[in-house]
Length: 385
Image (cartoon, rainbow, N blue to C red):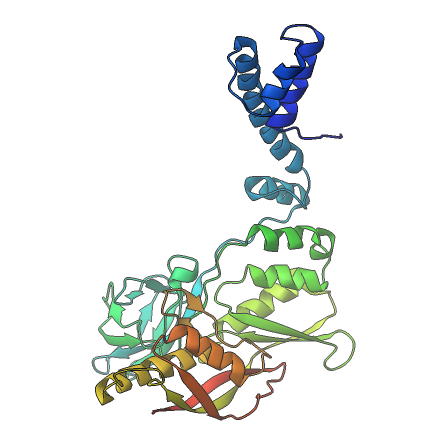
C-alpha cells in the first residue's frame, strides 16, 4: 500500500483551487493572492474550508501513524510490541537486582535453622526490599551464613550500594544483623524502542539455538546481571566460555541458573558450556587535584576534606558503579573494558563542581583489561591542593 501524507497547507490550497475552478469563490486573481499572503479576508466558505483542512491534517497524521505501525523501522511503543508478538520476541522488561547478604545470629543455636525461599525480607534505609531467593540453612553451632537475595521490585531503582542492606522487615529466626559486602548487580530498565527494534530485526537469529543473538536475547532478560562476555571456541570447536559480572561470589546462585538455562534453551545439544565470574583486576588510584584555581577566597581545610570525599566517591563510582550526584545509577567498568585515566578525569569533573584540575598520577597510562577480567578500585588516594 502506498501512502503519501498530506499536511494542512497542501490540503487547504487544493481545496481553494477546486473551489476557484467551480466558481464557488471569487475568480479575482487578487483573491487568491490575499489568501497566499495571509491577508485578512472575510469569506465564509474559505473559513469553513480552512477548518476542514485542519481536521483532515489531523486525520492524515493518524493515518501516518497507522501506516508506520506495520514497519519495524518506523513503529514505536505499543505498535513495536505488536510486531514483536507476531515474531515471538517480546520486549525485554525490567530485571531484578541480585546481592549476596551475610546473616549473623545473636548467638549459637542448639538446633538447625531453615528459612524457606522468600520468607525473609531485608531492607535498606531508603526502603529498597530484597527477599532470600533460596532456602537458607544455618547448622547448629554456626553464627553466620551467606545467602542469595533478589530485589522485590524490578528496574534501576532496586540497585543498592555495598553495606546498605542492613534492616529486617521480618525476623522470626533469631537473626541479629544483616549486610551486603558488595553492591548489587542487575536491575536493568525496560528495553528502549531503538534497542528493541535492533532485536526484532534479528528475530530469525534469536530463534536459532547456539546463535549469538539467542545469547544476547537471553542475557538481556537475565535477573541480577550487570554485564557478560562470550568467548566462543576457547578450547576448540563447540566450547563456549561465558564470563559474567554478578554479585554471587559466595553462593554461585546466578552462575548455576545461567548454566542450566543456557544448556536447556540456548546452546546447541553438544556445546560445552562454562560459566565463570569475571576475575577482578585491582586498579590503585592516586590523584592530585586543585580546587583553588580562579577562586578569590581559597577553600578551607575542612571544605577541602569534604571535596576530597566527593572526589573519592566519584572515582569509586566510575570504576565500581554506584549512584551519581543526580541520582541516576552508573554501571562502572564492564567486563573487558580498559581503564582510561582521561575518561575518569572527565567523569569526576562532571560529578564534582568544585574541581578545577585533576592529575591522575597512578595509573599514568591506560590499564588493559582482558575479556575475562573486570576492573575494580583499590586504595583510592586523593590529594587536594
